[in-house]
Amino acid sequence: MAQRNMDYRQLLMQKQQDPVSVDQIVLPGDTDSTVTLATVFSLPYSYLPFKKNDQSNNNSEFYSTTELSIEVFKSADRNFNKKREDISLKGLEPVARAFWSDTAYAKNYSVSQSRHQFLNGYLATSLSPGSYGYVLQMRRGEDTDSRMSRAQTVRIPSYKDLKTGNVMFGEKLVEEDGQPQLVLSSLGQDVPYTKDFYTFAYIPNFDDQARYTLEIANLNIQDKDTSKVGTVFSQQLIDDNFRTNLRPSLAPTNSKETRINLQSDTNGYTYALIRIPHEKLPNAMYRLNITKEGQGRPVASETFRSIWIDIPTSLLNLDVAVDMMQYIVDKKPLDRLSTGSQRERERKFREFWSERDPTPDTEFNELMAEYYRRIDYAYENFTSENLMGYNSDQGEVYIKFGPPKNIDRRFPTDGPTTEVWTYPSREFVFQATTGFGDFKLVSNESR
Image (cartoon, rainbow, N blue to C red; front, side, top):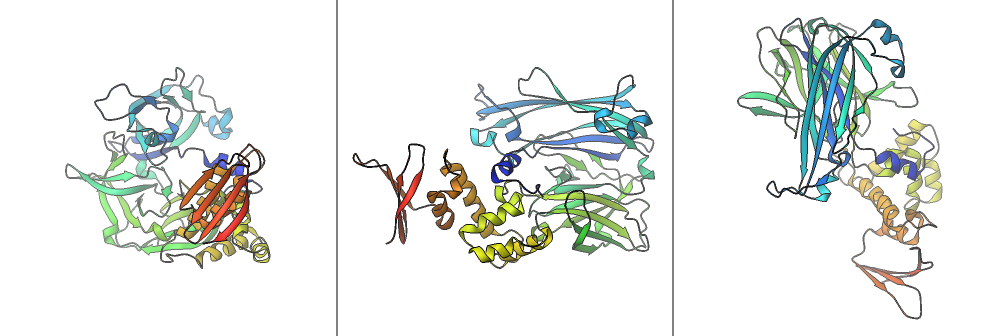
């Protein structure tokens, strides 16, 4: 989904952006005359500034403290006709505030840089239906100044008057003190690639005699085009998928995960809770709709992405991914993979790797992932001032054959530095050509 006409280094910069998630969700209020507006966030450890921990009693080498706050204002309708950068909250009446702070602990440096561990939390405000503006502020670590978001606006109707139900995504169901809870996705309104997830959707005006269907459609993402490509998953919902008389609420803060209490209420609402077999869905963007038979408009709808957090850099862009296949595909077949429309090239690319997938019953292709991880390794370890790592002799050998069983670096007194890479049935000898890490292949022998 990355932009076209980007090279590997540009993609690498894009990939290094941390998977920070900050989303607004709306839940029923404590009464029918209020609504809960919540900012739910997940901050990966790689985004947080960790500091050495002088306290040894918690078995953590590093820690990082983060504070967030939200201020909500009664908004004027004129703000909804403006661009986001032109929205002003000056002179508006503040109606709600919320504050949150917590500390993340990491047992070592590697954990402190993880993109898979998150500091989770939420800021919840109880509001009457209406139009509002709000700003978020965040302070990380020892920053003296808070970072403030641009002003944003939101219209909040009465929950029972919603025409299209809102949808949330969860990682798993748990139970706390006999209370069922849904653990929300650490990626907000997106989901981790290949991991099954739960859809939790409000169904307005639920009719227990009607037939409801959930459909997930792949979207074509090209410039501003988000048209539907095709249905990848469809399921007719049954009685067990529906939970009636619920008044879901946010559970007390838990920095490891954010949970929704699925608590019963005789004056509650009806929700659909469906487990989605995500391991067979491609890494792409989707639209989820729940429809009621005989009604054209979906009763619940949401757009989401399947996110591969550690995706190899080349796979962020189809053109780059195809170009990098030069080490395993001859020129004519590679040219065929490079021709056609975006959709045609993507289809041919997927077919190429699908034919070589060691686990065809799942979407994740271990062989493809390993190949492109080797491209990344070659870039990181063999790039010099003169050459990109994957274009070097050492990079090409590593990409084709993987990590050697042994590396022997020699420093002869009468010649250049030499590296000998040993594999079970082959040996490669490289010699330094400059003092900047450039090595040239001088021998390739079978053993």
